[in-house]
Length: 272
Image: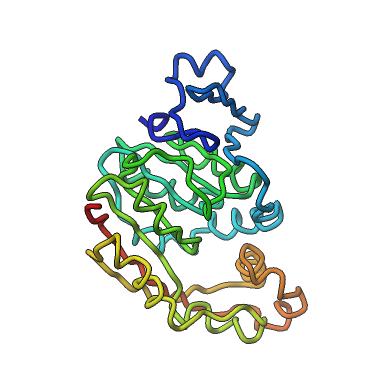
């Protein structure tokens, strides 16, 4: 089921079925003979042409593993919908944490984690026994066939809305999680973290109006009790890692109550 959803990033043709793929020791080959090897860590590199960048570093992924593994964002994962069966894709998946949680609640579904970072893909390949991971540019054409996906997850990630609509089946769903202005508010200013655009929700709605119908919306507000190591992981796993130093974290109280404030919007793909 999952292999049939994937397509070659070079020519767009389908990949060969599992029995023939097995002959290439775990790689994938399309009908036109373009081949992509599976790394020993379990992921497939589906970048085509010039490498657009490196994505998250190994250090950022290590921070993400530590913070998410401690369960701090489990309430965020609980906002995401399950799917009884079919193909679930997480875009900008990082470690595949959210995909894994959704698959836990979707016993007959299969999942694909897409991320530009090979370090992320290495970790995402182990996110769930029914998931695979691939390195891909989520701002470019996704390595997925038209109308092949049942649910797309986008959690604090790039939103390539036109591609989401192309790959989703009619009636397929898109779940988008974005931060609200007060998200992590207690530490943003003291640590010089990047601010949340207060118009983010409106911007998301404006780019989805053409291809999607909003069918559900939930806002989550709660607090986390974090010590210095947890705060360092939280800051280090995102873009603010480049703007914050250890001295800023050390200057905070030993424990800080930090707000989670996010919006989860659920969309259904409109007919073309």
